[in-house]
Length: 142
Image 1 (cartoon, rainbow, N blue to C red):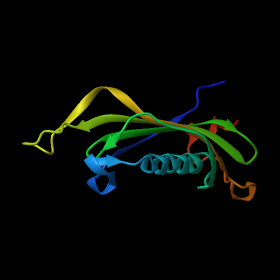
Image 2 (cartoon, helix red, strand yellow):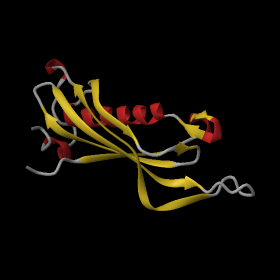
Image 3 (cartoon, rainbow, N blue to C red):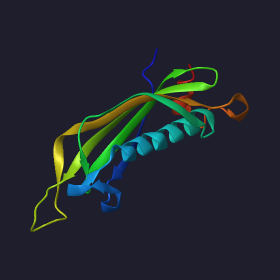
Image 4 (cartoon, rainbow, N blue to C red):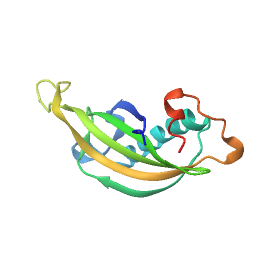
């Protein structure tokens, strides 16, 4: 079996995303980003946005703050008749330098830091499946 094609979304965490004191962002933002990656995976794989049925696992491993840059990775690891099981990983790659005299300073991390991971199942009803919209994802058809 070939390695599944992975998809990556890169985002910057904004001050508008802050939910807690100290500039901390809640895990719900990462969950939303996993959903965005799932939607794109389904469009590439089936030509439809589908529906996210359930997460079967989610772990938050490190904090997020305003100014952080994330890479959100996702891939389809199992394909059923209408179900698509997916894996997700979120990595912090840039973080705010927290310098009082230069609040816009940021640091590249020497190694990406995993901040969350999850797995879950999405569903694309048969009548909405239009086939792969991306040749790279056609081989993920199960």
